[in-house]
Image 1 (cartoon, rainbow, N blue to C red):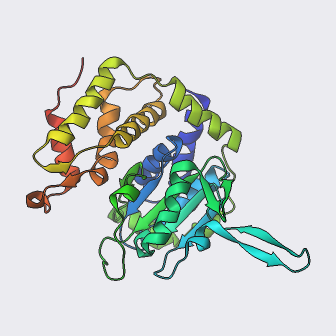
Image 2 (cartoon, rainbow, N blue to C red; image 1 turned 90 degrees about the vertical axis):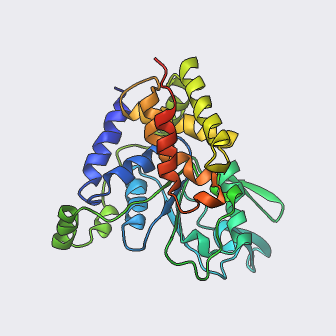
Image 3 (cartoon, rainbow, N blue to C red; image 1 turned 120 degrees about the vertical axis):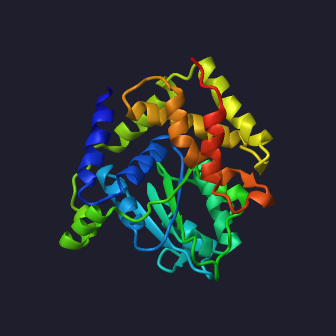
Amino acid sequence: MDANTHKIEAAVAFLGQYLHGKEKALRLALTCFFSRGHLLIEDLPGLGKTTLAIAIAKILGLTFGRVQCTSDLLPTDITGLFIFNKNANAFEFRPGPIFNHIVLVDEINRAPPKTQSALLEAMGEKQVTIEGKTYDLPKPFFVIATQNPAEPFGTFPLPESQLDRFMMKIRIGYPLRSAEKEILKGGSKRSELYTIDPIMDGEEILKTQEMIKREVYVSDKILDYILNVIETTRSSSYFSVGLSTRGALALTDAAKAHAFFAGKDFVVPEDIKEVAEFVIPHRVLAREEYDSINKREIVKSLLAEIPVPV
């Protein structure tokens, strides 16, 4: 097992005292991060989404920015803008919160479409263009966006092109009774997160991301298995639109990170199955007659029918 794998496992164990009952969400978020993807969390308020984002930033020693989306949020509120400096008699660029390593975009579906689209270039190209000038974003760069599924009023549903930019879509869910009891006993520990010592530095993180991408092996048999998964979503009677090529790449990259965290340098079908229910459902469209069925459950049932390579 790689030394950085041990560090990541230690981070998950350490953060468990701050994220009671959210260990699975934390692992999925780190899988997404080290796959160089972005994460969408769809859940109710007050379940620890912000705490999760801060915890990841601080344990990895990265800068953290937050955007609280509202119906009047402008693209420049995210990217930054030029302000005239009277002393210098020139316009100066003031970077927005997007110029952080980890950016929490809270209630993204409350931002108007023009502002949502401002995130597309940043998430896809790792850069932003302002007044005709292009600025590179810091490396690594990770967006965690949240949306509330139970409050549709005053929201702008994310278009498919935006949803496809997120490698994973997850839910945190309510904690177990025992975990919630511990939270009630100790109260919120979010403020303590700002004082924890990081376990990795930026260079180690980038090296680990590159190692996962380049050195975790995916055999032809596993690639054929992934292609069978893709084809099944495209031909299934449940879906009108199947998995895109970008989605297929996301599935492969997430499976690599999952294998790496398990101490392997190769992908097996179980790695793909573990991440598929978080990578695929938000990228496919259910037919009208199946709208009431949970897409995650459909994906799991389809995976169960696909032969596993031996």
